[in-house]
Amino acid sequence: MEYDLLKLNIKKNVKISDGDLDTICSYFKPKSIQKKDFVLRQGSIYKYEGFVLEGCFRIFTIDKKGNENVLHFASKDWWLMDVDSFMNQTPSLLNIQALEDSKVIMINKSDKEVLYQEFPVVEKLFRIMSQKALVAWQRRLIRNHSLTAQERYFHFISNYPEIAAKLTDRQTSSYLGITHEFLSKIKRLKK
Image (cartoon, rainbow, N blue to C red; front, side):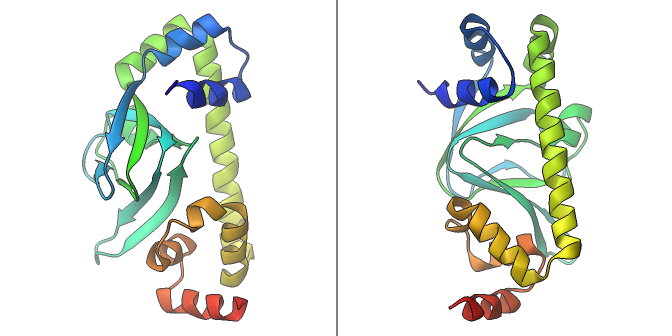
């Protein structure tokens, strides 16, 4: 039951038999994360990749001045990862923190490598997911350079209303790359 969402996510991306899908899912281990707990802290090595079953996470950095810069969010049916740290086993530049009580299923690097060897479809799955993530990052970069802050805000709340509803104004403004005060002005204009 707890793997149903992961199975649907995989089937959206690749053709796979139910038997292979069950075996692949058996490599993922469930984990509950409490609100405000960190899955990853800057400077640590990310030992797991995860898939969000319930809840929401923010992925952010903290600069030398102590400012938080939100890169993105991961909510239900999204993958939770730091590709660089996980793949290269190097200290992460990211923090991953639960915004609410959450449930994930996680896989470690060695188990993922086993799946790559035993099930070529898993490599195809993660290639497709990587391509989709790259497209999303490219589109976000283009929006950040071509849209006004107000347009970015309206794009975010209209395309990700479930995530936007869970965020504080400070988290939203950090994600949009604007000040909290400017976000307040944008929201007043909306009314």
